[in-house]
Length: 116
Image 1 (tube, rainbow, N blue to C red):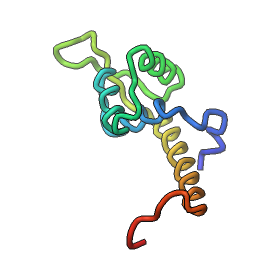
Image 2 (cartoon, helix red, strand yellow):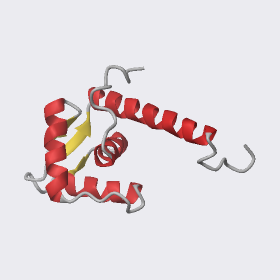
Image 3 (tube, rainbow, N blue to C red):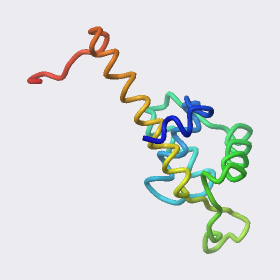
Image 4 (cartoon, one colour):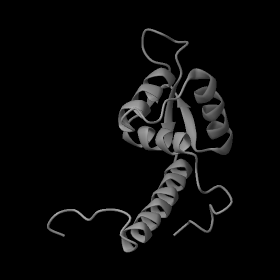
């Protein structure tokens, strides 16, 4: 896996990871992206404009996301999409988190699902 390739940037912050996961679902603009992250995290991760736009700028600079055409009706509203590199970064982080979860389960820190 590419975890070794991304070892200098992993682990991602929860905010960065949720942004990548949200964009893996659908291209969207900043405000909708922050709302999607909040919904996906059950309200645990909130991203304000002061946090969101610096993260977006960094992800654009790093090639993890790209701007898409503006939304119809509002040419000022920029939308974003996940790039192939961003998908690989998200996959590497997901693999890292899955490994942590496996280790936590092996120590009985996470309850196993009924029937498994």
